[in-house]
Length: 340
Image 1 (cartoon, rainbow, N blue to C red):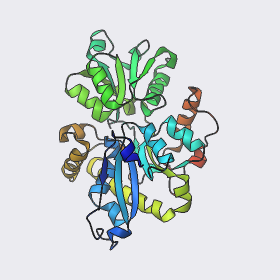
Image 2 (image 1 turned 180 degrees about the vertical axis):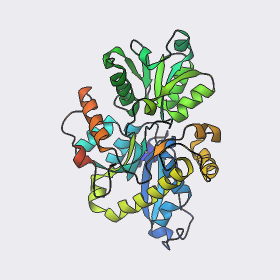
Image 3 (image 1 turned 30 degrees about the vertical axis):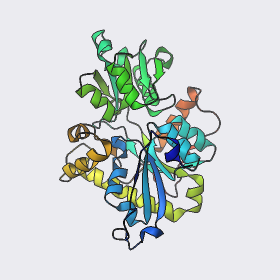
């Protein structure tokens, strides 16, 4: 039984089933290699949706399926179990724990929390706002929602705690499992605050169901996500991995051309409207909401190696990660490159 039939909360987009010849490749559909790609329906996954919709995977001889997940950790577990071939989402303790067992390898970057690019937002409920919770300095003593312990939003709270000098023990971190649950809980004033991706944070703010304190990337930039695969695939199927990466990087370039200037700042390029229209269908969000939540990507999929080491150290300090996890082994330099 495959991952789709077992978990009905995930949706699959399958490409190329009725296409006889892949665009620009001469590869017949029945000869293409199946590529099951796990992702979250957030702006960080935009390059994958672009690559899928524009036929870049087909051009590499790949019959791609985009498998949606509610959070990053179940995605990593599914990939390790062989239900997926690739994943591209935020890094989390579940991924690091499995990777530390030699199961997975990072092959490129996904999104990055960078200044000027809304990604992970810190939102407070209207009730908490009315009681004076209006800045990052007000976090101690309050309940803050995240999807799961050891998730990217959990690490975001750690980054803010380090910057503003308060202990993680002063925060009542509550797990709400999914981002839709976070939206409903904040909107219902059943929690003081939450960290959630921009798509969800902006929906809270624009519907007047909460207030935005700020974006994590403006406070503490970090390597939010990565593309990864199993160690077995990385070791035995180099052509397959490189084909995936070529298609993925074409999606990254299209996204960067549309929204990121040469100096790394936010801009709207000549193709931005077309990209937003394409993404609006797959992310089921209005164009204006997506425009407000553009994420930062490196067009060459280069990774911030030092921050990945910091993430591993932080999760260990929280008692969430045991054993040896070596970033230099985890980042597969046969495929991945690092930022200078």
